[in-house]
Each structure stands twice: as C-alpha cells, then as structure tokens.
Length: 196
Image 1 (tube, rainbow, N blue to C red):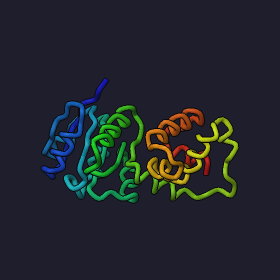
Image 2 (image 1 turned 90 degrees about the vertical axis):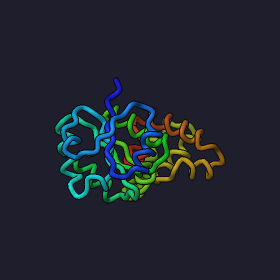
Image 3 (image 1 turned 45 degrees about the vertical axis):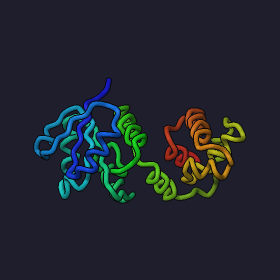
Image 4 (image 1 turned 180 degrees about the vertical axis):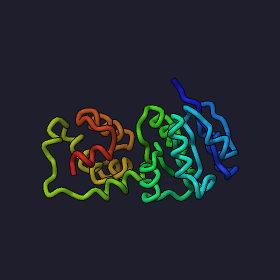
C-alpha cells in the first residue's frame, strides 16, 4: 500500500523539482500548523522551511504515525545524525536526482532508514577499524564479490568500485545486492559494520 506523500518547502524551485521527480501522487502543505496535523503519511520537508523548529516538528509528526524525510540544499553528516537521532526516517540532498528521491520514498515506506549515498560513505569512513579484518564473513562470496565487498566496506561508491575493477556501476550494484543477501545485511553501512 502506498502511503500519502506530503511535501513542505519554502522554496518554489525546490518544490517544482520534487514535484517533477516524485512518481507517486503528493499533496503540498504550506502551513506549518497544518503540516503538524498530518497523519500516516510520508512527509518530505526542506530544512529551511521549518527552521529553527524542525526537530520538534519531526517529533510531532512521528507521534502521528508519519515517516519523515528531511532534505537540505547543503547536507552534512552531523545534521543527518541529529535528525536521525530525533526520529527522522531519512536525510539527504534537497536537489538530489529523481531516482534517489524515489528510492528514499520507497525505503522509508518500507520502514527502513534512508541516507543519501554520499553521506553513507562518510559515515562508513567514520567507523573505527578493528584490529583484524573479519575475513571469515566473506567465505560465502565469489572471488569477484569479495573484491567488491572489500571496497564497499571502506565507503567507496559504486562508481569508484566500478572504475577500480573495470566493470560498470550496474554490475557493482548487482554484486552488492548478492553480497547483502548472502551476508544478511541491508546496505553498505551494514556491510561495513560486519566487516570492519
């Protein structure tokens, strides 16, 4: 079942960008009080539209069974962590490409947390290395999957891995999906936590 999508932004260019990108039906809500009363929806908010009370708004929306995606023109990892700690279901770049925005909506609707891939890479790089690499976890993988997994665990993007291994990003993504399934992790962050 598709949840209702509610958009809230104080930026007309941004609102138009989201409207063109979103493949599902949506509702625009301009008023913060009206927004705070939304129930059981995916709410997409531009940070500048609710500052300085965004965190309180996220908490109020969560009480009403909403899933909240916070977007910002210049996203950063520290702000992402703060919003995720305060209940947001996702965080990313307000001007991200269409497929990222739709991926975020789908992921959040499935009850998972979504973070823009660049921020995921930064978060993975912040994970402290253990003294020993958990190589035993890779026993179920093919040789090529092992190569891909080792690069992904360090926070490398699909594009970087593709260039390094002289394969296409689509092939890297396919290998990554097999790796995640075999190792029973959901994403690159889960892979990094397992292997580092």
